[in-house]
Length: 220
Image (cartoon, rainbow, N blue to C red; front, side, top):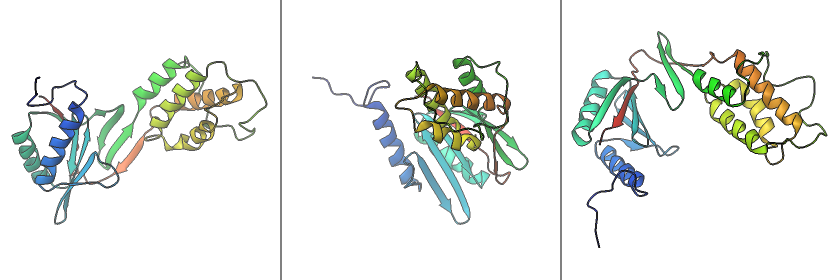
């Protein structure tokens, strides 16, 4: 019988052990866990506030006070072996660009990857993600590759974070994922054509210039 003194990276128990340790430490230094998202932690002192987001062993940290941010970074570094990645430019398929008015979030590379997977990288763009002249449901045969249809729709759902303009079209077509038809696939291709023309568009978040978004990764 062997008993591990710590959870090894790659084991099934490792993610839970890492999250438990990180959660306990953050709570001990004054953070509180969000009731909406267990991966989001909030630290507030007077009028200043900081947010810390965890994804596996990657961490995003931002706040309204640069001195408070540096203090929190020092506390984290004293407990964990972290690698400071500086200002965030790319996170989970989302490109982050700082502007004078806040942050611009876009998924340009992610959209191009979807278009490539669908074989429509060189398709002709359209102005709207869904047709306004005809119904989505038509009495036609089932689409021959339902798995491919569902994969593309899954990618669309993640894309709606920075492309809310496709939400209606995506939600409409998602109602038929159990048995998609050729007309539903035609709607998917129209969404792809719309994305081809708007791939460089994004979502602008207005915030104070003092809100710096830092990225870290656990180097253990």
